[in-house]
Length: 336
Image (tube, rainbow, N blue to C red):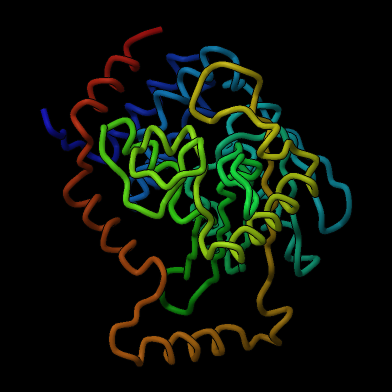
């Protein structure tokens, strides 16, 4: 079968069953499933249901501790340190979001560093929750090596996603979510799994040559967005997400995709800001003025503009899941 249409509720239930069948606590499985479904709905399929087979394998092997409960240390009034305890990143980031929402009301700005963490999926998912609470959110994360230093051929940095979200007046939050490679590595993973080529300019093979072979790209390196300038941004995020949090660097971390090896133990750094504290309560007016200037020009749109339409379509019509993936997940949901 080419694809299967399932409701959001059916897909989330299937995701939970896959995880709980593979050494994951129910509460953690529910947290992970919600995040993966959010990515799937928003069209970020490389961070969606396609991740479940590798997640299940890693939890079953013990590379990820599916029963881990993150712990929090308050290191300063506006700063917390969270240990994901080699579990899935989502429960740790949920704890970070909840804690920062509470603390920023007193301090105006607050930050959380997460270490011993894992793949954190669609970065915008986490900061959008801060924006829904009226806050600006910034999130930086590192990942296993995929990008070489500019001029080099061996991976040192991950694709190192960055996300930003801001609340809007009478509109969904403005959410910006991007990988610092020219394309998210998850899209290359999906292409490799489906046997599809990738566009030119996305990646290099292990010898440093341009490639359109997704499998060769996964063995080589991704190209940074913006070339040399993008490579500098990748370095900045590596410092914020790993050096600052005490996590492993990309070149030290094991794969997010395989069940072998030690836990990746990467990091994330999350910042929450009360916009009214810094703007004298003028933030909403100023943001809407900026957005108005952007949208007054023909051919422009805001980042993430199609998100609302995708969410409405998924709620109305359900989700189309590739047939092979659906069969794999169904089998995993029934196996121990």
